[in-house]
Each structure stands twice: as structure tokens, then as C-alpha cells.
Length: 77
Image (cartoon, one colour):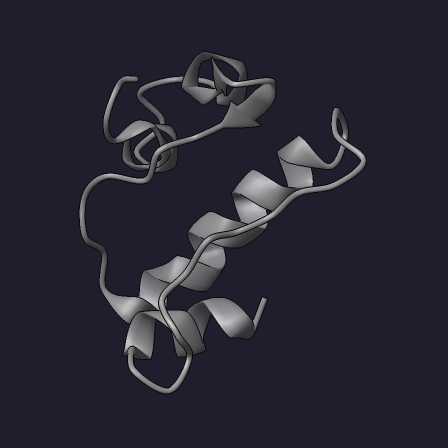
């Protein structure tokens, strides 16, 4: 699996379809990279807007909300 596909997608380096990888019957996009918490909602919204056109269910894996500012930022989406 290629690392950092969400990061490359967020930077406009690859399309969502290029970021998606198949693993055990699931379509996944490995995150890679670290972003400032302020940019997480923007990245997540853009990814979700494009993913919901092709998928019925979109899941985000994030750290426990009480332990991470990143998870708190992602929860606002």
C-alpha cells in the first residue's frame, strides 16, 4: 500500500481515484503526513465531497477525540 495518499490528494498532486487503494475488499486511502489541526476540516470536507459521489459509506479513522486536537478538528466535519 502506498503511504500518504490523503496528503498527496490534499496537495492536489493526485486525484481521489488515484489515492484510493484496494485492500481486502475495501477501498482505503492511507493518510500519511501531518497537518495543522486547522487544515483537517478543509481536507476532510474536500475528500468527503468527492468520495460521497462514488461510495454509500465513508469512514474516517481518527485518534480518540479526548486525546488529540486533530481528532477534535476532524469531528467538526
